Image (cartoon, rainbow over all chains, first blue to last red; front, side, top):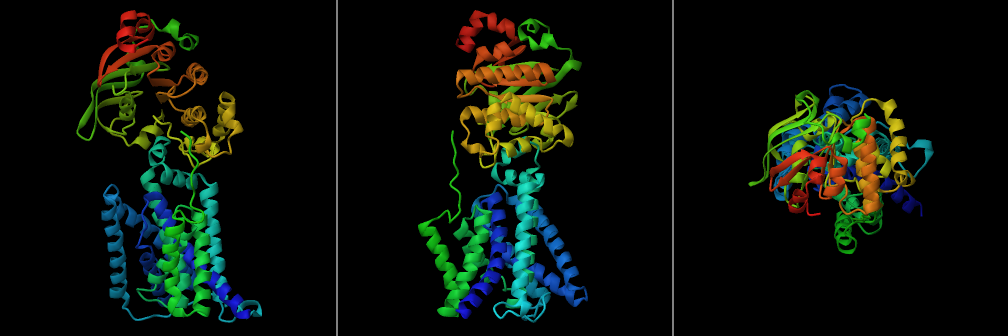
Length: 289
Length: 255
C-alpha cells in the first residue's frame, strides 16, 4: 500500500510536467490545429540555457526567470520568423517545418553543449519535506510550481482582456479582426506562452531525467498522450490527461515493468483515438444555425 | 437631428458636399482569386447618414462591405472622414471606427454572450464609458441580458443577429457596416432591429452602410440607395425616389 501511494504521488509529480507540456501543445493546437512536434526540443534548449546560466554563476531563481523570459521571447520570434511564412501552406508543409524545428534544436543543443549527460540542479532541498517518506521535496516542489503556473494561466485566459482576445483569435480569426484584435500577434503570444511553459517543465524535469539533447523525447510523447486523453481542444482536459498519464505510467512501471512505460503512452494514444477521438473533455460544441 | 431621424423627410436632400462625407468610395474593385466581383464602384455614405446597397444574390453586396474592411483583394480609393483607409489591415480599419456586422453574424460561438460584447469593446481605451454601454445595449435587446452568461452558440438566429449588432455597437463606431441584418429572421425581429438602427443613427449620428435583399425595409430606413448588378452600380439616388419609382421597383427590386 505504501508503495502504491508513493508511486501515485511521484506519478502526480511527473504528471505535472506532462500536464504543462500537454497544455503548451493544446495552446498551439487551438490556434493552428496542428501539434507542435518541436515543443519538447524547445523546452530542452531552454533548459540548457538555464544550465549555462547556472554554470556561469547566476543563482538558480535568477537563471529560472531569465530562461522563462528568453523562452517567451524565443517562442514569439519562432512564430514570427519561421511559422508565419507557412501560415497558409498545406498541413504537410507546416508539419515538416515543425519537424525541422525539432531536428534543428536537437542538433544545435548537441553541437553547443555536447551529448554528454549533465546533472541539473533542483532548487528544492535534498531531504524530503515534513519528514514524509512518500515523496521527495523536488517532486513536491515541481508539482507546486506546475500548479501555480497552471493557475496563473487559467486566471490570465479567464479574467484578462488579453486572455479573452487570445481565445477569440484562436476560435474565430476573422471575427476577431473585425473587433480590432491583432490576430497575428495573438498567435505569436500563444507561441511565446507555450515556449515559456515548456521551459518551466524542462527545468522541473531535468533534475530527474538529467540534461541531454534527447531528454524531452519521451516526455513529449507522454504529454501528447495526456493531451489526447483529455481532449486536444480542451486546456483543462489536457492538464488532467497529463496527470492521469503520469500516474498510469508510474504505476505500470512499478507493478508491470519499466520496459512497458512508454508502451502505456502509446496504448493511451491508440485507445483514445479508437474509442473516443475527441478525448474525455473534448467539447462537442452546441451550435444552432 | 430630427430631420435625420425621419428618413422620408430627408430623402429628397441633394448629395452631401464632399466635406460631409463619412465614407467616400471611388473605383472599388475586388476579386476572389482570379474571379473579379466588383468592377469599379463609386458610392458615399453621408456624415450621420444611412446608405443602402441593394441587389440580387451574387451582385457583390457582401463583397462590397468586405472590400471596405480590406477582407478581400481590393483596389480603389476608400476614404473615411477625409483619411484614406484602403490598404490598411482589417484590424486597423476597425480601430478607426468602422464596425462590421458580417454575413453569417460572426458570433464567437464558444464564448458567452457577455464575452462577445466585451470583445466588441476590446480596442476602446475609455474604460469608464464602456460599462454604461452594456446597459444601453441590454436596454435595446433585453433578451441578451437574460442570456448574458449563456454560450453564444446556443442563441437563436435572431438573438445572434442582435448580438452581432450589439458587438459592433460596443466599438462605438463612426461607421456601421451591416450585411443583410434581416437575413433569415422573423419579420417582427427585423422590424425591431431596423427600429434600433433608426434610433442609433438619430441619437448617436452613427453613419451606416446597409446591404440588404429586403429592399422595402432598407429603402424606408436609408436616405440614399445604390442598386448593384453583377458588380456594377446600375442606379443610384435618394431612397425615397427609388422607392416611389414603380418601374425600378419591378425590374430591380422585385416587389
